[in-house]
Amino acid sequence: MNEKNYWNDRYWPRVMTRRLSRRRLIQIGTLSAAGIAGAAYLGCGGGEEAVSPGGATTAPAGTPQPGGRIVWLSGSALSSLDPAYMALGHDKYAVQNVYEWPVCYDIDADGKIILAFVLAESMEWVDLTHLNLKFRTGIKFHDGTDFNAAAVKYQVDRVKDPATKATRGGELANIDHVEQVDENSLTYVMKKPDATAILGLRGWGSCIPSPTAVEKYGDDFANHPVGTGAFVFDRQEAGASYEFKKNPNYWRPGEPFLDGFGIKVISDKAVAAAAFSAGEVDGTWGDMVAAPDTLRFQKDPNFDVRVGSAGGIKRIFLHKGREPFNNIHLRKAVSYAINRQEIVDAHDGLAFVTPSPLPRGSLFDDPTQADPEYDPEKAAAELKAAGFEDGVTIPLTVTTDPIDQSDAELMMAHLAKVGIKVELDSVPMTAIAAKAVQGQFSALYMNFPSDIGAIEYSIREIYWSQGVFNPGMTVDADLDAAFEKAQLEVDPELRKRYYQQVQKISMEGVYEIPVIALASILITRSRTHGWISVDEPGGGPLECCFRNVWVSG
Image (cartoon, rainbow, N blue to C red; front, side, top):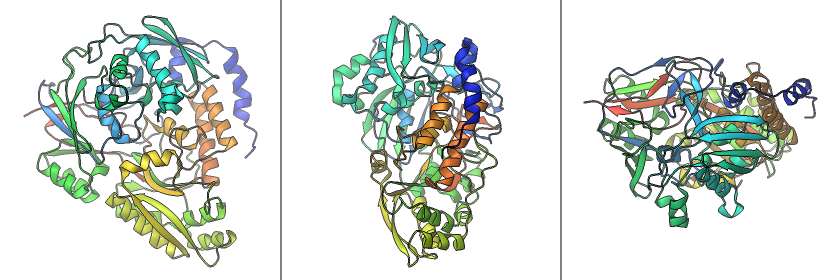
């Protein structure tokens, strides 16, 4: 696709010839919430200055009470407690409570989604290649050492060092280096103009650990994590449970409310639902239990269940450089053959059909983009055009999660009807991530987040040739060009057009096969409070920080 990009040609000269105000440049990294559907969120940061579009919040009743403990349910063991090596979404349950980062997304008192300062106190773009950050003073790491600009520089240098082999390195790919200005200030120097650089500053790789602890523990640092967060790592039973206790010296007065929290790993959805019923766990995302149990919890006064949209897209990532998926006609045949509505129905209404990579109604979504079709006749025609008129066998890797297995069985039946046989390979979720980022799968079916806090980031990391998570090994000059132009555009509405261009290219080229989008579901016990419900345009959870959560009774 070599179509002339008229909006970039029109607006780029204007962007480069004007100096932007500090307030205007803060908006570069702020997500517009216009036109997005509602969801449940967990609160995260809390900044003094931020810019954001509207929304609405339903705050929990009562006054927060100190003390108590909660247990969060995770469907998988954590891959790492070192933010440089996070590979699974589940890792955030620990990492984003032990550590903090310069900026993050949050929800203000009016229910608006904002870009909030956390460890950073202020920032200013000098131009589109130099971003100055000033950090808060008086903050201590859990080991008693000082947080300062040198600690931030240490982490950036560490993640960018090829010898570190950090899985989060791609988040900081366009940062050439950082220059320390003084004890509490530094400058991020970009390799090229990048209006979206703030995405990297709130990425997991930008969570700041104690340099002293990293040096002390070396390769074993992941078992001795030390940050500035509201909770301190206590102990773990590897792969089964993790314990965290309150940081008594946390820099935000009065927080956290909890004395501590635990993470309990239960991969079996039936066992997970039983643990909820028995009061053994207090909260989780809805995909950790089966849909019938979610519906049951909705009717139970002991639980609060919040259902929104855009919690993630379940899709088949395709390695387009490897047979047989290097054949676009075969990719189209597979897409046409899948009856997505039947899969939606199997999810008891907690899913919907949507184009990919942008869920319907989400940030940057193109409302004119049609949903993928179910048409067995077209599937057969494309299979013939691919040279497989007599049928073909394709590989498909899927997680061992029972729901993913059920989805796969339905898809296998759909594909069989048009002459496509599937060789299924079931792999535990804990083994998926590392192999996925290395492109070791020909076809991989899994869920990937699409919430408001991650939508722009996830688009880039899936389709950008240098993305952190690019299981399809996508390399497309037109896609890369769209991302580069988005990096240069400070106007969110104009940047939206570039991401819509990415959506168009990916859909026309069948770069992946969208199957269904999951509703965003937050399930908590009613004795717990401080979970923030956003009933406005949004998507799924922002982050999983528990510093505002409290318990009653």
